[in-house]
Image (tube, rainbow, N blue to C red; front, side, top):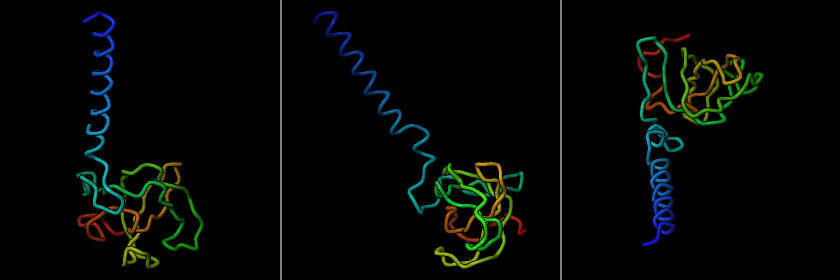
Length: 127
């Protein structure tokens, strides 16, 4: 086998290994299917809920869809300070979660966009 062939095979093997690592690596374990509970979703010792959410979810000024949009959650994993009741939403309840949005503003996110298994999330304080 020529040196050129060995190098080509080595580069191809490295690329394949990197591709498999990217597809099946740690980040893949954290991502949840849309609408499914995240791998981790619970209240930590700091009292905040850490949970998967729908990327692109909107945060509203009040717990109503007709209030001003404060900004988005661009990421698919966020923390939430507390919860409160507001408008009913497609999640089948009226629970909304309060958080700091990705643009630095604070807003209310409807529970339908947070991948909890039950709402309100057990152990999270009401606000």
